[in-house]
Amino acid sequence: MDIVFKLVLDFLKATWLLSAEMAPYLLLGFIIGGILYAFLPSGLIARYMGGESVASIIRASLVGIPLPLCSCGVLPVAQTARQSGAGKGPTLSFLITTPVTGVDSILATYALMGWIFTLVRIMVSFVIGVFAGIVSKLVPAQAQGLEPLYCDSCEMTKPAEGLWLKSKKAFFYSFAELPESLAGSVLIGLLLGGAIAVFISPEIVNKYIGTGFLGIIVSVLVAIPLYVCATGSIPIASAMIFSGFSPGAGLAFLIAGPATNAVAMTTVKKILGVKSLIIYLAVIFIGAIGFGKLFDLLLPDSVQAVKALHIHRQNGLSWFHQICAMFLVGLLLAYKITNWVSSFKSRKEMAMEAENRIIFKVPDMNCEHCKKAISQELLKNYSIKSFAIDLKKKLVMVSGGQELNPETIIKDLEKIGYKATLIEKE
Image (cartoon, rainbow, N blue to C red; front, side, top):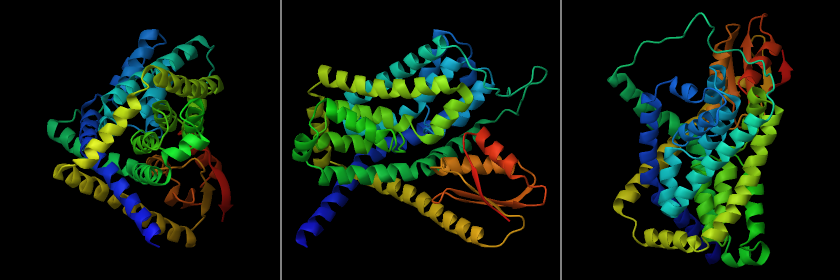
């Protein structure tokens, strides 16, 4: 019993230390992310991604690096840019570099893993994104039938926002929309990081996996099916290195995890085609493994730097780090609990009888951003009187008049990258 109690205490301590180390930098990243979101002109991304030149591909990768968007959040931005005239190669580059980095994850990587790891992560995501864009440029294009966002005879304009309105928008994004969308992934990442640090010892890694090429392969194979954002992957990768994995394995996890999930793959196929999807997956898989191995060969001592940084901060975390951690964890838990309550209410609504009720299964719905995107799309359908979304069970219920058409709703959801299946119609 004493051993179990000690393991639980060690787990809680390791999780809290990861939170405290990362919190000030992640909160700063939230603030900078909000400023970028509010003050970056809406048409700038599409303008930089226009055409199919190598310069456009490089610009798209550079634009994607600081944006704090997860692999789900980047999809509507990429689709809008594509509809606005962005090239296929630049769009693919943007889809790779954006979820792998982001100003919040860059600062959090520095907090847990040091400046060498941070610079390498940025450079690798940039190189992989540019390479994928160039390969996509060389492959013959496929007609995807995407409707342009604007017609030739009109241009969508909106009134200019003043400084005060932009500041409010930045604050809301920094402390509401961004942490809400990342809450689940970051909390799971911290818990997994704490568990790895306590329950997986260097002796186990050395005995069954080793610190070489096999460890890199294992980390990529674990990362690809796992839905984890760029920030949520950091405590996991840090704990992996501390538990005996090589730095290259940690880097491979940081690259492969955030860039791949079912929604991303579905949307890449829809807006860019099957060939681009194959390029997308192949470049991420091969690039993560290749650069992971190269990192181990060129910087074999970086593992000691990561461990030394972790031990140093473990022994000297200031009150400022502790306060930031309390604020960050409290903020993330508040949003997670709110989402749980909302999900519970949605399940109750689904259990109630409703006029012309239709229920869909949406297997690619993974996070709060997915839920928000689907909600916004359903609100556009005037035949829907009410709807409820159960994120845990991946169900969407809509109700309305007799004119409500399930096929139309399925097509609307597919348009934004979510495959839906009709499972009940009353």
